[in-house]
Length: 136
Length: 136
Image (tube, rainbow over all chains, first blue to last red; front, side, top):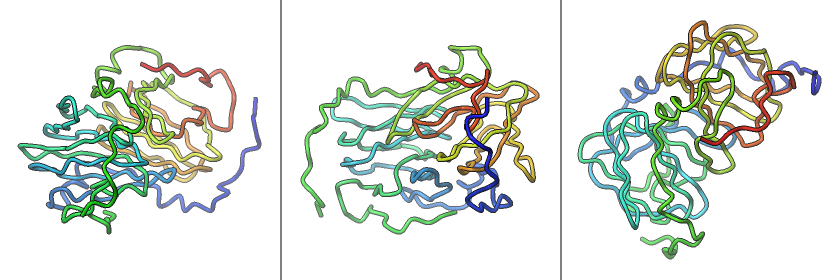
């Protein structure tokens, strides 16, 4: 049963621009830690990749849930009452309002999903805050 | 600089429930093809995992962009003018309105990101349509 008429590319999307993204390859294109780069956008959400090493700040996002998916390495996420340990192929969802501090004794590569409005340091503005995020 | 006051778990989130998700492990818990399972939810978006083998139907989503991330195997996504070939660690974003047909000669395991409203067959309702999606 056809639920509704097929419509022919109604948004004038240039389909030549639809290309796959190799996450590991994107991660070779930069070296900075704690500086997420945008690799995709869908439904007002951003897909980002980042390299983490060392400690980040404990922070929270007032309105946005956040997903951390580990590509390589080990990511720790300290919460108020426990610490999560994530390996490659594992993810954690940090709901809005929950204090969390990502840290990584060794370099870890992650993929992030979060709304376009999300600031990396959440409720804090400090020297770790990245406001102008590169698209790679 | 503190942008706004820290607020203490304002949503009464049970932090004991925040656990990591191992994607490969989730994928061992079911066998059906073309039947996505919910493994997470954030910002009104769902994270799903699925096993695909064989051909799916060409379809489109009127209002939702969709992300396919390959965990293991090879996923093909046929578009109107070309076919994408995705390996493990690669993803593709299919914008709303774009006709696409996923297919996989051999079993492929994928992770999907899409709005909670998304129907797997998009504009079509047929025997491949899954309306009552399991959470695993």
